[in-house]
Amino acid sequence: MASEREFTRSLARFFGTAKGLSVGIGDDAAVVRNPARNSVLCCDPVVEGVHFLADTPPPLVGQKAVNRNLADLAAMGAVADWLLVSLVLPTDYPSAHCMALLRGVRKAARAGGCTVVGGDVASTHGPLVVTVTAVGHLPGRALTRSGARVGDHVCVSGPLGGSRLGAHLRFRPPLAEGRWLATQRAVSAAMDVSDGLLLDLATMLTASGVPGAELEVAAIPIAAAARRAARASGRSPLQHALADGEDHVLLWTQRGRQLAAGGPLVPRAREPLGRVIQEPGLWLIHPNGRRERVEPLGFQHRLSPS
Image 1: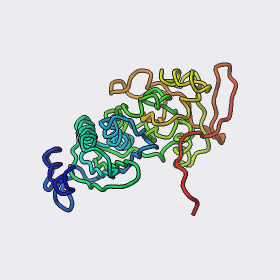
Image 2 (image 1 turned 45 degrees about the horizontal axis):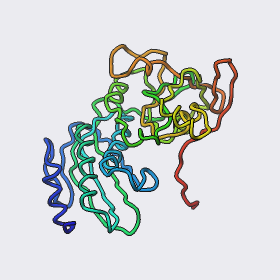
Image 3 (image 1 turned 135 degrees about the vertical axis):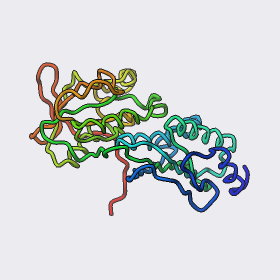
Image 4 (image 1 turned 120 degrees about the horizontal axis):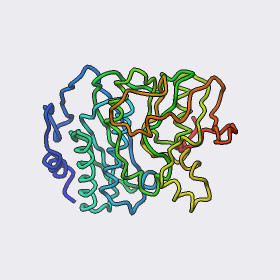
């Protein structure tokens, strides 16, 4: 592989320039113009052995690193503008793999309407780590996790479960859906489903200061991959849909059952799957009417206690 500085210079040509970019790759920092008053910023890494396997094709690693961040911007109702990309490469990582990874980054950035304007590269004896910082702007209001109220309906923008069969690498960040939801006054809270429907819903309830929610089992959109995963795992498709995570669809609450006609949401996504309730906890309502309290299962990183 070329030296670090030769590599950095080549990236300026690789990613190119864009409107609004005053100083790009090659300086100590990028200089960009903000097209709105409020910027939206997020940062997410992908780590080999945690977010992808060692044999994952490098372009898919690059795409996932970008799209995880774009899904977070989508959850805020933001437009994606700029990306910073940090590569921590194993010392024996082939240069061909590195360039394939960067092609995945560039492909996802172009699909999301944004441009890579900087970052950093380092080597390590540990696993491959790709960290992306995304910068966007708000064309209108910001969607947040903290606006849900008792009586609101709970909705998601797509099917859930079985992401580890490949969807966790190939998902499309719901940027258009997020921007459209931000224009709907009835939408009270929103977030990206990255850790599992139950855990993320519990996170939203806590942020909003409301006690609980109930979900209609028959209304939960279960992905075909969840049904395939269930045949090997011994868990039900519903359990996969509730807790697998990395679905990267939008979870939101709204006042009233229906949003305005039009927009990018498919008809199924316009139907609520539950509602926010005064009773504490998370509850499933089965087709026979049985109510079942469930734990907020999902994925959480294990951090050392302070």
